[in-house]
Image (cartoon, helix red, strand yellow):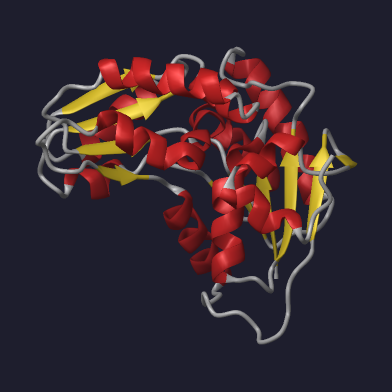
Length: 261
């Protein structure tokens, strides 16, 4: 089994690591766009063009499924990606975990990139899945970029700024950008209120990987004694994981099977 993941940068690490934990025997193709990142600042048309190029580079390696490991690309490019690649290659988008977050009943905050915050796509998800639970959309200026470069000071500053915009009564935070899952514990610490209950965090990596395995009819049970290789594509050319990936546990998990530049 071979699963491809695509993103502008290392935000796909969270889902790639989830595949690795569930099915270490699966081969992985990680297709990145270092020449065009970040995608969030681009027009929807330009973002879609770049996402298609990154997806087609991954598709050339004949994966069994393609995970769009980026919320913003899912918002703007998923329809075009599916039109171009399905039914031959199943394409699985990354959707903010609003429904399971709202099931807890408390006020919810969605941390997302400015490009996704307030978008019709996210507004529709809130309308369809929040089930009447109060939801605050929190734009996280610069956080994805800081995570991408493993800039620890910039991460702390961006997390603190977003925490200031998060209402004090929020009990659940949805991580609406895959990059944010790489610093989930720092986000949890920032939104924790004195004498208050610990906030629940909901990412998307586990759910999107489970959906990919369902689409393939595969169980989360590895073949004994096997470990799939990891291929890294940088704008279509085989390369190595960016060095900042090793600042995160997810990147280190993949390190043994993929070179790092």
